[in-house]
Length: 197
Image (cartoon, rainbow, N blue to C red; front, top):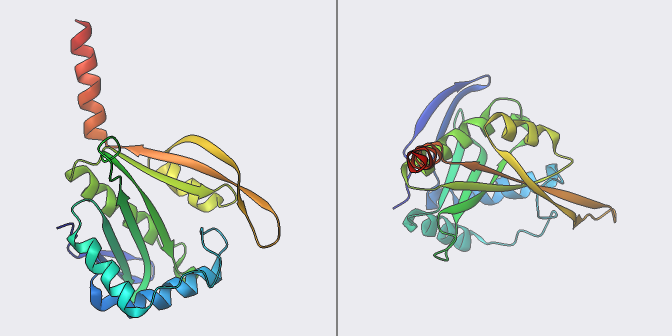
């Protein structure tokens, strides 16, 4: 079971608690997603395109808890649900060494280090569970997110041109980034060095 127990951090806004989502969080999740969708146009969805009902959301969370390769994290500041991170692993044998994640934080909580703590928690879980590569896609206009990802060790892998057609009829590009498990990277480097001897 892919469960991450509660981790407590101090942040500029108070106490930050990060842990796996649970089915009882479903109603708060629905509210959070709808609010975040309306606050930013950097997400893949337009406002109103998220259509899960309460039962579907609770089942979605339950499925994540049962998965061995996926996680869904919550971030609460002083008990208030402020953000989430979801990681989904590849299902085919040639791709199950990697996965991709999405991150969202309510605008009222931007700048408090919540995104960084969510990503660090994901890294800890992924490295301990054999995930070799963590991928992400980010809107090239989202400079704050790109800066965060770079400082956390993600490298740029390429661009998807004219990837999103916005409601304003403007096209946006998507930047592809990845972070590689440092333990795996070191063992490959050591193996390569030994093979040369």
